[in-house]
Length: 155
Image 1 (cartoon, rainbow, N blue to C red):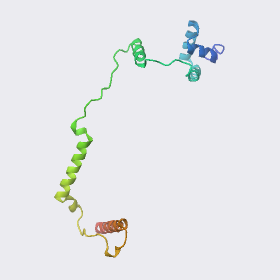
Image 2 (image 1 turned 180 degrees about the horizontal axis):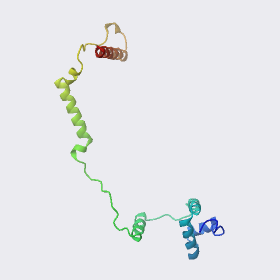
Image 3 (image 1 turned 180 degrees about the vertical axis):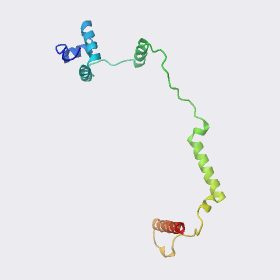
Image 4 (image 1 turned 45 degrees about the horizontal axis):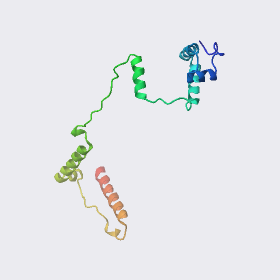
């Protein structure tokens, strides 16, 4: 049944009566048939449902309602996703931090970081930088180190 065929049947008041449960069984059957077949009717239904949201009663026990619907639909066993209650020791963040810190200490004590930079590592702060702020001295030292690094790489 299309909307155009049943224009006398489809009206907001009749739809609101259907939503409130005040329509006759014949009207309910017609509404359900129309809603299943016609998208326009369904959009009207959704609009009316949105308008009547405050007037309709709240669903008290949603879990019981879902179980009743699922049982009526013939779906008894709903697969549930169980999250493991405990994480494995190697999946914890602290474990990763301990490994990272241990490797850093091992590399620092063995001199791996020193071997990464060959050449003159005594680029500190130029002596003419007296009186500059600490951040400016650090910027000069860093730029000097980068200049030396780039010039060594180009050779």
